[in-house]
Length: 123
Image (cartoon, rainbow, N blue to C red; front, side, top):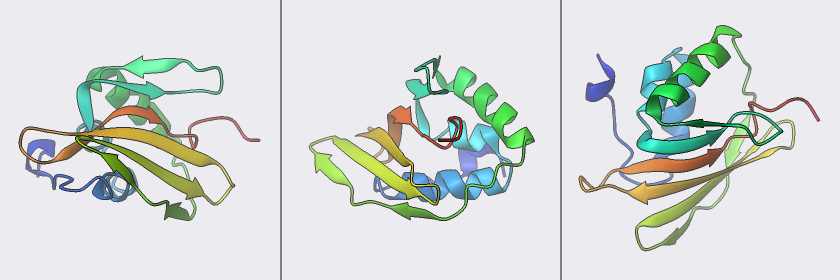
């Protein structure tokens, strides 16, 4: 199945679940498809970013090569305001992810801003 046939997030709560499932499959392109084409992803503790779906895919390709252990992830309640939603998860190491999702024309949701925290250095 190519990434165009993958399950879409029809509620903001679906995005983190889909991202973790695709990471477990080693599917960097599938993860990148959960972002808007011009989304921004924080890639380190210095605030450097990957901008755009292609750069985000490249980031995840590199990250997934290291076989990261995302540990247990507990999703925090989603906060919605119109066509925007704030998603967040708490990681086993105590770090918190923060993402902004936007409702798309097809009624799916995609991240537009992501500070995943798991990609950062150890505390």
